[in-house]
Picture (cartoon, rainbow, N blue to C red):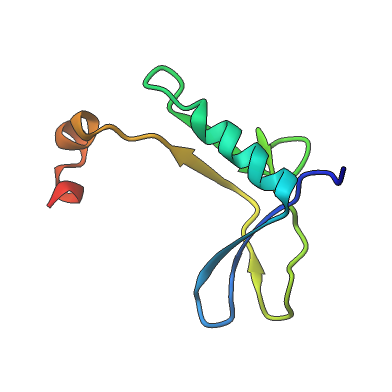
Amino acid sequence: MAPPRITLSLAADGLFEMWLNPEGRDLLVQKLKALTVENEHFHLGPAPVGELEVATTAYREGDRVLEWGKVYLRTDEWDEKYFPHVLK
């Protein structure tokens, strides 16, 4: 079994892409399914900092790898209270 590999990048034309091997996909799905109102986000980053480790090597020349980020679970109630403009 290969180690999980998740690469987040911006292609030369600005398109966001997420590259996953099967193990990386399974790990991402596991993290997404664990999000709750009490545990509403997780951090992406290279080892050893990220809760979900992402790779730092681009797949293609000219791609810009994104090494840091967060994934948030946002309920409609939270968005209505704090970010009502996103519900329009």
